[in-house]
Image 1: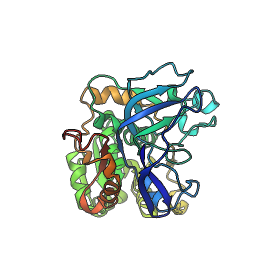
Image 2: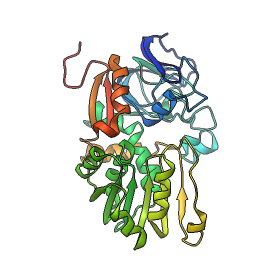
Image 3: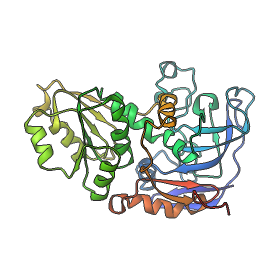
Image 4: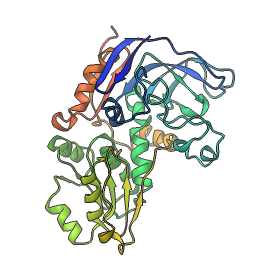
Length: 350
């Protein structure tokens, strides 16, 4: 098969690799139809995740068709359309039994595209397939469904739920990339009074307004007014920089919540001299994807307006150009970049 292979910091190649096979009776092999790129893939490309070995196929989000299943896979069968979760779950360890699949200690967690070959390929082997795939329901397109593989559940679980967004809240989302915008979208489930997006990219601020933010601006007067006044009930950090985390600590009100989603590649300062008396709760987390069934129902019913979240489409074999587009998103306005195995969505297969 053909796949995108990590060759070391700053180097990837679209090349021929061995087809995946069933290695354990709980495995499935999925023929990838639609996949996408995550910010963590860019961290890997930069060499910031030392555990990713050269020769690894990248990617951890996909929608596809089941090609083969192991003898102990009972919930899916060949021919089924499924979402491949970014998190693999053994289903038996103490964390999985508490639906904390991202913390799996039975061989799962975030392993696709990190510890084992991932989804930016024609086929992918999915361990623990009964717990790590979700059959498609209703009339969802593969392009919408791939958003359920990671970006929507990450924003919802790690941002909105960990931040305890409630009706009438003021929510500030710092970072209007794909996961920050997904937090804007999923926060609306709980009817906040006002949602404010903050970013340094004007194209992304404009996207935030299209996707439902009540206000979107560069760090400036609105944030200063909140910091000096009532403050935000929930501040969601979705940029992964020290500066964005500090901005969240400034803007959150006493008794409020800071929910950190962003993947931090360097230390961030915790200003306890300013926070110690504010009764602030700070949460972090790895997505569990336990919310996928609920989010799928909302997406199918039209209650999650995600149509503007996907901005760029490529054929799967054009994945290197897709990476270039995604990496320049703050300047170009690119958000979720998806790759289709049969060519760009809307075109006839080659």
